[in-house]
Every structure is written in C-alpha cells, then in structure tokens.
Amino acid sequence: MVMTKKQQEKIVTEALDRFDRAAEAEEENRRLALEDLKFVDEDDGQWTDDQRAKRKGRPCMTFDRTSAAVDQVVGDMLQNRPGIKVRAMEDGDNEVAEIYTGLIRGIEAQSNAKRAYKTAFKFAARCGYGVWRVRHDYACDDSFDQDLLIEPVPNPFAALFDPDASNVMRDDGRFCFVFDDMNKEAFEEAYPKAQSGQSESFQGTGNDREWFGKDYVRVAEYFRKVPVQKRLYLLTDGSTVDADEFDPIADEMEAQGVTIKKERSVDSHKIEYYKITGAEVLEEVEYTGKYFPLIPVWGMQINS
Image 1 (spheres, rainbow, N blue to C red):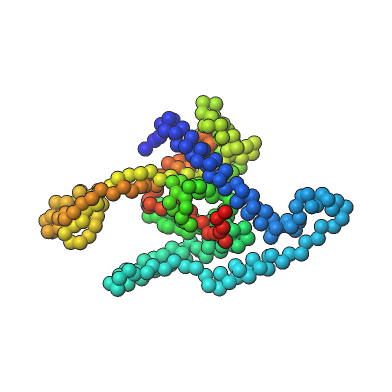
Image 2: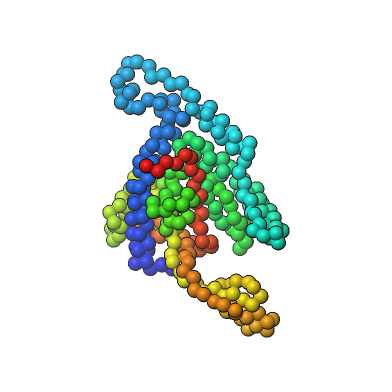
C-alpha cells in the first residue's frame, strides 16, 4: 500500500518525538558508557581533559590493566558459548522441541550467530551495553523464500528502546529504533527519489535538524507496536486457531467433523516496520512476528 504524504508526516512526526524522548532518557547512561569505552580502548582515555590541562608539559602515563580483565571475561564466555535451547513443557513435546532446536541451530550456523553474540557481549563487558538483532531477508535474488538471520549491531549506541519499557529484554515497550548516519552520496545513490535535506513543506517538530548534516543523512529503522483485536477458536479436536485462519476453511473442517467449541476475543498487537529519515518514510516493510528484533545484552545494572 502506497502511503499518502499526510500518512508519512504522521509516522515521521511520531517517530521523531519518540526518538528524542528515548535519546534524552538514555543520555546519561550513554555518556558514562562512552567514558568506559575510552577508558578501556584509548591510550589517553584514563585521563580527563581537565587533568591533562593541569599537567600541561608533563607526561600523562597510562597503565592498561582493564583490557586484560575484559579479555578474560570475554574469553570465559567463548569457552561456554551461549546458544538457544528449546525445552519441552511435557514429555510428549520432546521430539518437537528437538526439531525446533535443530532448526534454530541451523539458523545460528548460517548466520554465524556466534559473531553477533560475541560483539554484543564484548560491548557489555566494556561499557555495560551491547545489542544483537534478528532479521529476515530473501534467500537469493531470484527467490521468494526468506531466511532468518542473527546479526551483530556493530554500534550499540545506534539502538534505542522505549524508555517506559521495564523488562530486561525491553519487549514490553511500544517502539524501538536502530539508525545509521549514511554518507550523503551513498544515500542519494540508494534512494534517488528521497530528500537529502530538510523539507520546506514538512519541518517535523523542529527536532529533525540533526537528521540532516552537511555530509550525512540519518536513516532509521522504526519498529512500533499497534494494538489489534483478534478472535480465537477452540476446536473440537483440541486445537486453538485464529479466526482468520479457520473461517476460510470452515466448511472443509466441518466435513471432517471438526467444529468450533469455544471462541473469545483477545487484545493483542502487531508490529509495523518503517525505514525513515527526518522528513519522510523511505520504505514500509512487511513485518512478521510480535516481538521486536533487537535484543539488548546488559552488563551490571543498578537502579538508582
């Protein structure tokens, strides 16, 4: 479905407001995380600007004792590498659980998921926060089959979650972002019909200015939850199905002696996925699943 200009403006305005609120809520945590990264990775990261200014003309020596500790923690993880395991709830489900586990292991192997796990864990050890993601894409250029992929997020500061989310996985939030500041030349090549600067007709809420720089355009993947209501059927054969799946084949199922035993309405949600700039929607991508595809990996957490 092609979005109208008014629909695009509504999505972008909502996204800009939510992006700014999430960034503001995480500002202090991210500042401290960046300090931690500099402390571990940079030769002069253990000295503040004020301290170096006071020692002008004198050496500021650094003795790196943190990198070895980080490497030890990451090495312990690699010796006991995490993986996804499906557990059966009842004895009769053991075979099904093993099938799902095998499928997931195939996805992990095809995606080289250990790279995603290691990248996220290493950031968590260095600055307290890492991210990996799940993505689906076509298997090849001449196929309609899609593969699930587990991929690293090379820069965890490019991922933002709803600040109102409280679960450790942030899956109870209403939205999330992952963004990239694209080189303007690369952006114009990838999206030749898109605006590479602020729109005169649409200025968002005034907070879209940082989305367009002299040499870059910020492109964000925006995931949002939208409430929906659906009907569930309990069938006489004991199975539970969505009404939308059962209604088209109801006559065929009744011929087999399967009918509706009970039904109920359920308040649920779906996830919509947009690729946006600060001025327009570049793509509206069909999204399957009810969970956000970004998985945070936390270091030590303290609620203060």
